[in-house]
Image (cartoon, rainbow, N blue to C red; front, side, top):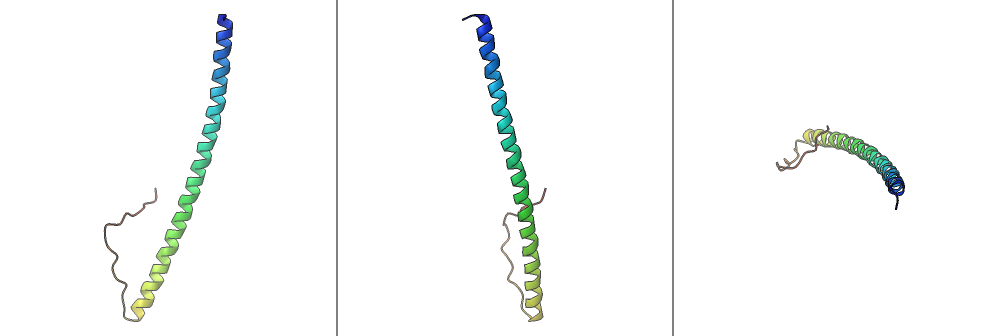
Length: 80
């Protein structure tokens, strides 16, 4: 095999790898967008839960009752 054939094969393999890398890069970008969307949805659910807890606290307080305290030590997600 001549040196030009080896060089041609190397260049063609490099082009194929670059194409695959571009495809993987697009997939990662798509996944990152989906993760951001899910984080936003989770944040919205968390906000709604806080509102429901507040309404429940107010309703029980008006009846002279209180919610039992939640156990400590649970993991809490923080927004970045």
